[in-house]
Image (tube, rainbow, N blue to C red; front, side):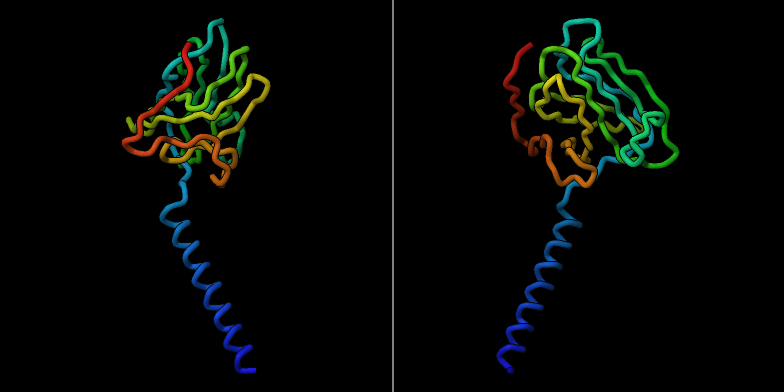
Length: 170
């Protein structure tokens, strides 16, 4: 009987240790959502569109997903930022992408944004075909995710010091 109680105690202790470890990891190392009030500018690093309107990118409120509260948008070929409304509260950012041309978006494609009084961030997009519209949730390092809990990675940002390589040319 004592052996069974001791084994149960060991299991409980291990579960507590693992739970605490995961909780600490999540607090310090899990990705954090990018939260902003005002999107001031967007610039597509290297456009791939060749017509009047190609790929379309909209930044919106990742909490409500209501496009009436859009923060701004940009078309690939024109690379002209259309400013939306600033938010009164800090909102997590969702990037709605609508590839419209016949050329897919390559992995590592980037959009540079300026927000909240001059803060800058490069956002990294995954490979996308022109047949699918996608919501991407943005982390504070510029990585993108397929869900708002930032658990399903779409495209990671390069590690500090890592050379960015894009396997595509216009």
